Length: 159
Image 1 (cartoon, one colour):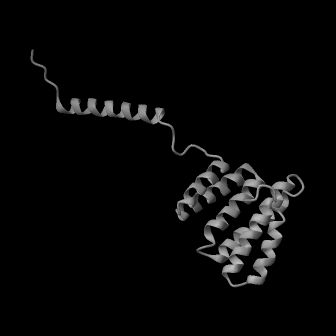
Image 2 (cartoon, helix red, strand yellow; image 1 turned 30 degrees about the vertical axis):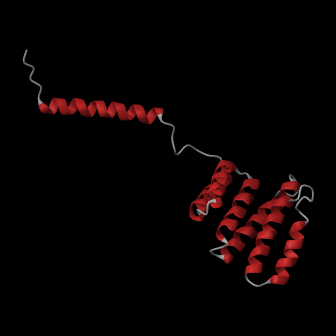
Image 3 (cartoon, helix red, strand yellow; image 1 turned 90 degrees about the vertical axis):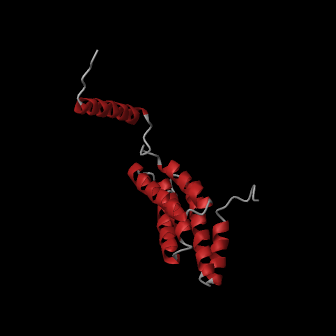
């Protein structure tokens, strides 16, 4: 039994199999680009910030901000701005302050509907601003802001 197969037919058959297999893998593999919520992105940003991957953390925080804006979630917009400020102030005091002040303005919008989140967020922003001021040598302003920030932190369970 002599079977004559032309090499181009064999190659075409091989490519067809590879194509089918690749399509199969693409549709069965979960997408890495699946939409993530702003909260998930903030959590991933903090995971990176904790291990000193500031650049990656900042990208997650920025993406979280973009997502929160799309979700129209004022609380997460404010939190993402604060997190970007925390992440960036060691490189740029100016940028850290800009993010902090923007965050405060969003927390201010929450005062009526969610006063607890607004107060805690505002206090975190003030503490970041105080930290930046102290690094700039503005100790008197830093102390005043830090005392003001302390009013927004719960006294119970303080460790």
